[in-house]
Image (cartoon, rainbow, N blue to C red; front, side, top):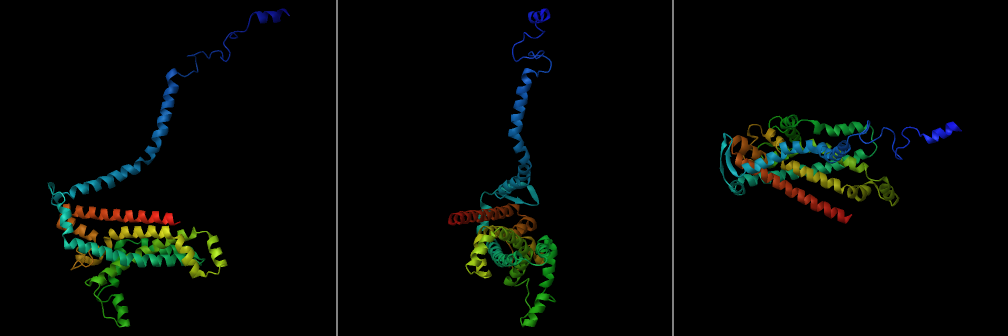
Amino acid sequence: MSSSKQALAHPAPGSGAAPGHQPGAARGGRGTPAPGTSSWRSRLYRWDMKASPYAFISPFFIIFGAFGLIPLLYTAWYSLHNVQLSSLDHKTWAGLDNYRNLLSSDFFWNALKNTFTIGLISTVPQLLMAIGIAHLLNYRLRGSTVWRVVMLTPYATSVAAATLVFTLLYSWDGGMVNWLLHFVGVDAINWRESTWGSQFAVSSIVIWRWTGYNALIYLAAMQAIPADLYESAAIDGANRWQQFRHVTIPQLRPTILFTVVVSTIGATQLFGEPLLFGGVSGSKGGSEHQYQTLGLYMYDQGWIIGNLGKASAIAWSMFLILLIVAAINLLFTRRLRKSQ
């Protein structure tokens, strides 16, 4: 009893501390962070949460600014000056004279017409063939993976190699195309010198290279179509052709619109195929400029003649054409969404 009373009369060390405080846990004691440490860490954490997303996406904007935006603005500045390739440091202000000269130049309108014609000849058959090939590959075929790789092979082939082969095929003397036409009773065609012949030859190179690529895009879109739609159509008595018309094509409208826009952009920037097909006169688009595109016209003005101011104006004209194409694409996309 006496020991217990003494214990009550003399409490253990630290028992007089306030509730919730442990011995040695006084402010500023060992194990307690400094007053400003927690606030500094919280500010660092908040800054990291806000800045990290921008740091992750910054490489794209840095690369785009260095290789996309700055050259684009610099080209726009050059288009307002008279600049020669031989004397880049000596340029004079020209205002909109380069653009006025383009609008009054027959070569510019000829290049624009050729670009439109070659783009139309190459895009329409290309996309129609791509839809047909994708429709065939959508069904179960033996070695479907092999066929898909075969479809992508022309796209992986370099432009120089493909154009060289087609140049030999369309050769006036000894070309396989004229050799086959001889059996049909058609006279040999000088594919490089004739207007429609040269444009058709260049378009065939584009068709060969990009049909398989677009076919795989259509195939991926077809495989995303719900099978219930085909089953409902089959129950209603629709055959494969009717299913293709009334089920597949309507479901492919957004993808078709996308491929049309991409193909139009590619046709506007067409450069390698006509340049290599023409040989010595490739930059001129033939002896009579019969297949000179906007890309070739820009190259001829900038690097052959050396008029960088006019070449920059052509480049910005092409950019404005692409903006118009993008605006038309946006308009059709909105109408398509409203119709659905």
